Image 1 (cartoon, one colour):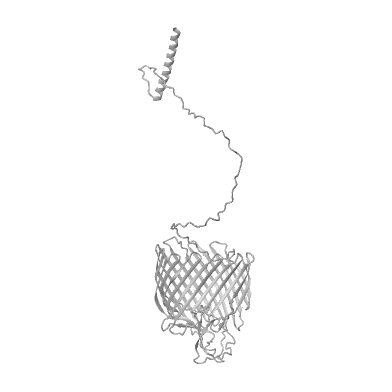
Image 2: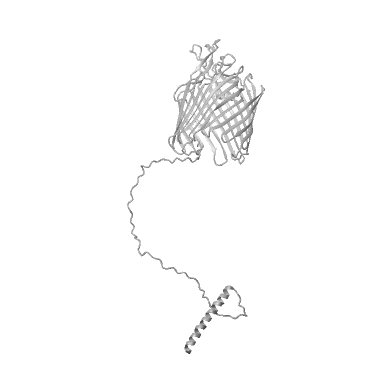
Length: 583
């Protein structure tokens, strides 16, 4: 019995101890303080321990994979029966505009070169171009050329020499460039003029004619940011030359010109200004003239995405031996009917075309002594047309115009023989139509450029003119039809070919009949027709090495000795061949 009581006492004692530990743990957890007035009782106790989750064992796959490397047979597939068709979805995206790259030879070459060639008609060609390319923003150099030919007719000689230096410098704000040069052109008055029966050549000892031209030009132009809608652009230019012939006729000219333009978002405001001082002197002082011209052209230009309209005026003042002041309108508009594909343009203006001994001589080198130099006034010039392109491969322009001109210059054969005032029938005077009533000039101009590929480039221009004159019977020396066409072919990276075709319609000359002694037959003046012609030239070059090549050029392939001006047949078929070296 006593043993049983001791067992119960031990049980209750153990229970009391465990309950006391639980109460003490609870008191520490809750943070409450025990009241010393109240006795501690043992009712129950909690056992706290860390939680340790234990997962049951996963069900594992006891089958091992097959590690043998076996490759199934791969059949050869053919997709030739699938139609290659683009999915046409109208997304509204515009076609990208490709910037046309200027036609160039596919092989790499330097701009520096020397060229030498010879041909029939005692042809000698020498040419050189040297430029410094070491500096990114600076370029300078020199050029020189010589070409001489001699035909079968006595006195049928031609020679030209051109030499000069040039420079160009691009600065942050402006670009400066200029050229100083010397040009000489020599020929003879070899005109084939016969007496009235056509048996005796009157021009047995052709006189020489030589033109020398010392010239310079320089320009300073601002560099404009096209993205700046408030930019100011400007330019200043100087031109001058000393020009004379073998008969002591000479012309000194000096010109200053410039423009100023201010962009103001949707429109531009600006003006073009120029002053030209010309002084022409002759051997006997009978045709001396001081011919000066001042021009100012203020304008305002409105420009949008599909239009461009310019409103202005040409204010011109002639001073020197003759004083006149003229005011002409200057209006031009350009509207895009289909952007980049077709645009409509039109305009109306007037201007003064300054007469120049130098310009006349370059157009017709067989001028008589003491030619008259005068200005030509375009009282009215109305024009309009279409222009556009189709990407980078096709471009075109068509223009029609109507002009009223006071003083239209024409080349007319001199009326007298050697014994009268020094005039010779195989030389030309400059006469002016429209002095009584205005001469009317109507015409059409067309231009086309086609680039079939990187290897083929074609181009051409056509001019159709009609004249309604008031003083002269015909527009002497001016053709009513002209055609200029060219083609270039890059056969390979070493071989290329180019060709040019020029054609001209009938022209008219006013001539006289002469006796055997050179005197003129009275009342014998009459109109003659100078036949039309076509002149085909073609050339080829083969690049043997990167820097060394050979060339050949054939001129007047049709071999017709046509006449541009009365009594002056051109050279027949001629060939020039030679070597060139670039470095």
